[in-house]
Each structure stands twice: as C-alpha cells, then as structure tokens.
Image 1 (cartoon, rainbow, N blue to C red):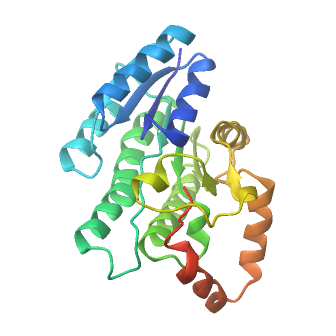
Image 2: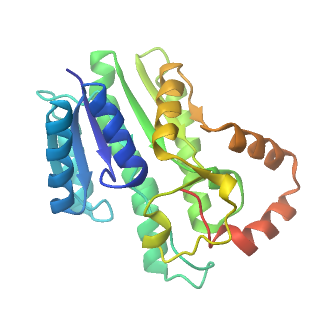
Amino acid sequence: MTTALITGATAGIGAAFARRLAAEGRNLVLVARDTERLQEQATELHDRHGIEAEVLTADLAEEDGIAAVEKRLADRRHPVDLLINNAGFGNKGRFLEVSMADELTMLKVHCEAVMRLTAAAAGPMRERGRGGVVNVASVAAFVPRGTYGASKAWVVQFTQGVARDLAGSGVRLMALCPGFVRTEFHERAGMGTDNIPGWLWLDADRLVTSALADLAKGKSLSVPDPRYKALMGVVKLAPRNLLGGVSSRAGRKYGPQ
C-alpha cells in the first residue's frame, strides 16, 4: 500500500486530498499545526477507509517544523510515494501595509518549505524510480499580486523546472493552480469574500479529482477548471498594466487559494 504525505491537511484542499487518497486506499501522513484536529481527522479516515493515518504536528513557518517533515520524507524504511505541498496562507493588505515579518513568513512557507520538502521527497523517489509531488500554487501566480502572487509564481516556475530536471526518472512533479475555493483560507487571513462572484468558486473535492487526473497524465501544470483555463487565456493577452490595476483593486484583498 502506498503512502501520501499532505501538508496543511486539516482543511480545504489539503483535507480534500486526504479524503480522496484515503478512499483510494493510500496510507497517509497528515501534517498541520493543530494536533487535536489532526488526530480527529486521522481517526475518521482510518475508521471510514481502513487505512493507516499518521499524524505529524509541524509549523512550516518554523525551522523545526520544516526539519521534522524533511526527516519523515527521507525515511527509507517507510517511504512516501506522493507529496502534496499544500500548506499556505494569505496576508490582508497591500505591500507596506503588511509587516515585513509576515511577508518573510509567507516566503518561508510558500517557497523555502516547498523547495526543501520537494528535495527531501524527490531524492528517495528517484532512487526507487517512482513517485509524485504536487505543489499547490494558485492562479494568482499569473497576475501581479504582491508577495502572495510572487511566491506562487515561484512555486510554478520551481516545480516545472524540477519536473524537467527529473524527466525520465519516474518522478512526476506538478504545480496545481486553483482559483477561489471554499476553504478556511480567507477567514484565517481576515479577508471578506462578498465581492467574489459565485461562478468563480470551485469545489475542493472536484478540484482534487481533476488535479490527480492531470498528475496521472504527466502534466507539470494543472489549472483544474474550464472557467479558470479560459480566464488564464485572457490573462495572457491582457496588458500587464491593466492586470496590475485590477490586482490593486481586488486581487491582494481576495487572493485565491
């Protein structure tokens, strides 16, 4: 039985990945900051699907947290076959309105942790000749959106670059770029969602189904919904200064995740 490790596993997209992979019969390593929620989730998934669900409490904004997950990924005796780098957050406010400490924390979680955990997982996977890594980015990666958009753009470029470097090794890497998903993301960031049109919202479980299908096809980039695929086509054609203006009015306040 294969094992998947999911960061940010207790809510939103991470929880949807956990439900889907458990239903497929995969054992899980669930990573988040809240031990109680992790234990409740692990018990529920074990009881419902008969899989083993290991709990690993870690804060990826802290050195000790990243190191703990690196250590688990590097364990050759209990290999991880699929890594879902999902942990992330948003800051409310424009650049200079958000503290530099919070901006740097975002880079640590979205960039440093993703790079280090990808490396920790991909090394053993390459040795075995199989495995997969999904790094959750955002459609915000494709528009000018301050630190959040820049960090997600880094995730996309990093993931696709590593995917090319590991081509032919049996290890697949994919950047997942969802739009607005009904999760705890906006509430935790103190962001309102009233101005977001209803048609832009995605269902987390359907998103995960589409993402896993794209990973199986060997895609290095997944925008898992026709609505957002169409929007991204428009973004490619729109002038950068226009996108910047739209982002200033709405994007930084209502970042998708």
